[in-house]
Amino acid sequence: MAEGRDPPAPGGAVTLALAAAFPALGRLEPRDRELLEQGVARAALPAGAVAFEPGAACEHFLLLLAGSVRVELLSESGREIVLYRVEPGETCVLTTACLLARERYGARAVAETEAVAALVPRALFERLLASSAAFRDFVFAAQASRLTTLLALVEEVAFGRLDARLARRLLELAGADGAVLLTHQALAAELGTAREVVSRLLKDLERRGWIRLERGGLALLDRAALAAFAAAAAR
Image (cartoon, rainbow, N blue to C red; front, side, top):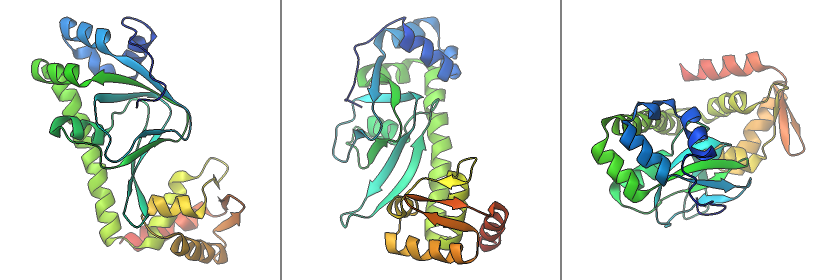
């Protein structure tokens, strides 16, 4: 997250926000917490900005304070799939993996909304990882949690029915009013398939009376039917 990066602000608003968003870091020993507060920096990205991309060097441990960042994988043919989203109070599993393995990024991250993150430089990350049991527990607990999510994604893509996955994803993405403000291309990226396939499946759901296709998105008309369809297909 190089864009919009501010200089370190030890003891300031960044560290207060960090403590509020990541209470587990409060278990650090005083000396380790002081090191973190002195070394952390703030980064801000406008909506739509790229946080990192394939081949970029990984130099900071990322802790999201506000906004939403989408991490997606792109194929050589141009197809893409959303791997996961980083929300406030979460870390980025790919960033952590790249730091641990000293490798470059293999995917892209895009700010879906205006995003603010705390950045821990690589040297400080490695120092805390080596010296602080509380920091190690925090890092590896976050990795384990996200790994479970990624394994579920692999299972869905490999074995799940695409129409059921789409129904389930629409339920997850819909607002309180039932609106899903995503294009067919964006939905295809969510599922790791082609736009034409998603368009065909959406038209089928519309024929069933469960959704209504609209310009730039769609509206859910029967959440219960979509949920029942997704559940039945998963069995």
